[in-house]
Image (cartoon, rainbow over all chains, first blue to last red; front, side):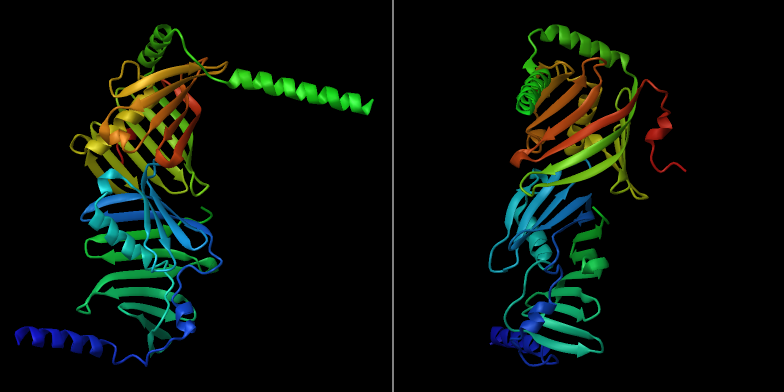
Length: 200
Length: 215
């Protein structure tokens, strides 16, 4: 009986979370709004600050678009590669870890980092709900929330766990040509800050 | 007449290409004892190095290169400072067993001894720049020469270093035995190439130049 009440409570709160959002939509318009790197993007390099459980790593990240995926390669300033991921736009395709430096080759940690980074690259498909607040639309795909304005695009992505608690928060600012100028990813004790290097 | 000129030009170009290629092609050094003695003597006589550097990070799979540049100083026995000016402002200083980073004004310090990875990186850099990799147990080495340069190929023996680097190529000027360029080769055919230019040897470098965060 106790477990039935707990399970019922969980399902009740989950359904309540979306009650203030509009009806389910299968609109491609919402899919096309939840895009961070637009179709014209090819590559960019970012100054990178990575903080993992109190350990700080800095370097330069190259993000490059390939046919249907993005390569995310972080190197130290001295040129030593830390990791090299390939993340597909189709979230159904598992990301590939081309390389991770031994000292960071912890499966759980790498998975956490990749899953968070993937949120800025994957193309959402399928059903969504929308809530409008002034100029801002909050578009929800499953447990991922996108804050969208027509002027700036997606400025924030939040992902919640099963209990509805936000465990990953991403803030994005755009520069010229709508390329993200800064991206901050916060997930518990893992924090990634990317700052665009102009003409890099 | 025109056809004759054309054929002669082709021969001359071909001849130049072959001879230039032969000049630049490296052959293995037979008398390594003599070379090692010369390198040791140069290393002993070098108390400081200051130069500009250009760095290229070649990502083979992505077919991309990331360019950096800055200034480098070295002072015996083990003080090294890399100051990156482009594309980001970033300085690393290794001095008195301390690894200090100035990341655009944010200073962080690490104890080299307590961090095995930093300790090994420090050793590799110091070894490559000083040129004192002779009889160094951390590397297996082979030596090559052409008309203009010596090439030392170092294969790391240390487990931590081996996980990051397959081998290190050090190109030394035949005239001065100073390091012209270094290539750090990694897995997946990626590599980092560093050119040293506008070098000054044995210039007076104050110790304070290696202490970051000085007003």
